Length: 473
Ligand code: FAD
Ligand code: SF4
Ligand code: SF4
Image (cartoon, rainbow, N blue to C red; front, side, top):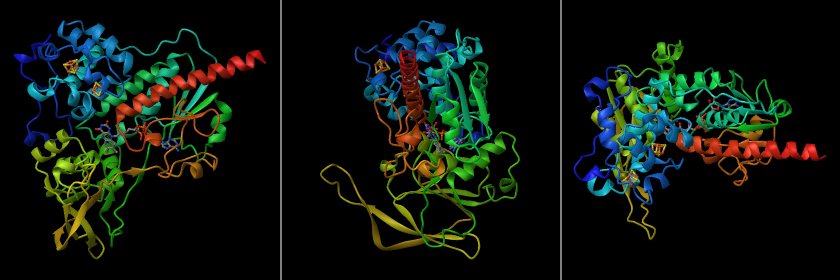
């Protein structure tokens, strides 16, 4: 260990930008055994590991790095999977530069340990060696839990609850499990076989999936409550924010998720009529993506791969103030995306379809006492740019869950996310819990996993205490 002084930081090989455009394959390759051992040995085994503190799952990073450096990979996998249900996914798509790696103590002078790539390597090695086994329940508890939503929060909770011997039923309105892992995040960041592989494993462990079931539609929340000893709501946030500027209703102005879902479905081999008709396909078009977060970066990079004539990202702040991962912005730049910083759409122009955008030039104000900068329009500085397709990537809000579930007593916050008791993850309805983006607002996969794990522990306590009370009575 402690080899960081003589061994430089290295990431796995990355595909050349001109080759990336040709397909939707993941752009990062995997470490070889020797590279993983070498990179893991750069860790200085800190007494207070800041990497671990800043990992939402508090992964025991120094231990699995040491084991990897020593070639003890089965043990490394056992430790890494003890705190993370889907390490192969986090290793690929966590914004490590803001979490574990961004807080590694050797980051400043030597470049962080490449933690995410090692986590991916350990887990892929475990899969290749058949060390990853489906859940094997020793004795069934006789209790059952219903989970609404098969995204990372719902799946992580299901995994933990099944391990406790409970019967677990997941209901999802989509036809495949994974939530945004399958239909939001593009294949070039997370190949869909990785998600499908996890699904198969969970199913083999006895978790029952009910796909194409919209809770609040044909099946009510009441029905679920009567069938199960507890219910978990893990429905994510899906209401796209819109610009709401003049002529926003012109054709070819699309919400980001509609566009990305169509692209992911095509990649999975589905028939997507609006893609085949050209409506949701950027091929040959001048594409404008509005927004500066990770979803915007996914849209611009998808458009590049679909063969767009040009791809431009409009963002109202500057590069330094972009909310998305710096790594994703760099990837987009390398792939030929144009960025227009300090630019905000003011109105769309067109007869039936969008043809132009009127853009307002913006500027940043001086820092306030808290160090924040506001943005202001620069008076009189407008310009027009041509566009055949506009994608709005402005974030997501929660749907109206009390209305959707016919439960006005289900308490929500101002932004529609569910209000839970933070001590036990329970909503205002007895025995109904919630986790993931529907509680936190649009967040990260690793936080959804963390919440799913914590909610599962709370649900288990609830079920067991209810059972005890019944026995006493
Ligand atoms: P979701 O993943 O949204 O899953 C919710 C599930 O609930 C869905 O399957 C949905 O169909 C189902 N559902 C909803 N309502 C109902 C209902 N009434 N009945 C039945 N089922 C229902 N995070 C990262 O860490 N790294 C990234 O690189 C990253 N990239 C992203 C890219 C995009 C385009 C987007 C949109 C998000 C990205 N995120 C990323 C964020 C991450 O995907 C989410 O934070 C995470 O998926 C939230 O998990 P969840 O389980 O709470 O919800
Ligand atoms: Fe880093 Fe994410 Fe893995 Fe935690 S789960 S160690 S934040 S890559
Ligand atoms: Fe190793 Fe960096 Fe974590 Fe320290 S902070 S234990 S050097 S990975």
